[in-house]
Image: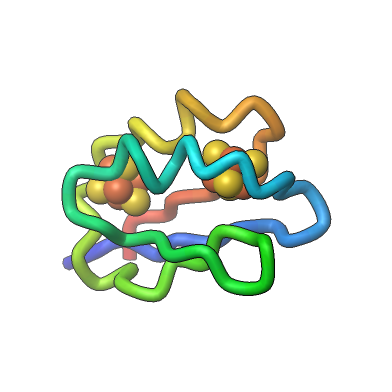
Length: 62
Ligand code: SF4
Ligand code: SF4
């Protein structure tokens, strides 16, 4: 069991809030957008969803 983490690059404004809040460093900045490069580490806490003002992040249990 894990989580699929998706960032909508059209909505992401690169504010880096998700990077700062994620306790397991799922995100890295790639070309000015947040990229969930370590999605397999996701705990499903949804902290990143709460801080993203642009509703760019989707977390799905898989
Ligand atoms: S919090 Fe949202 S808008 Fe900001 S970098 Fe992360 S995904 Fe992009
Ligand atoms: S749900 Fe929590 S652990 Fe998963 S990417 Fe968002 S902040 Fe990180």
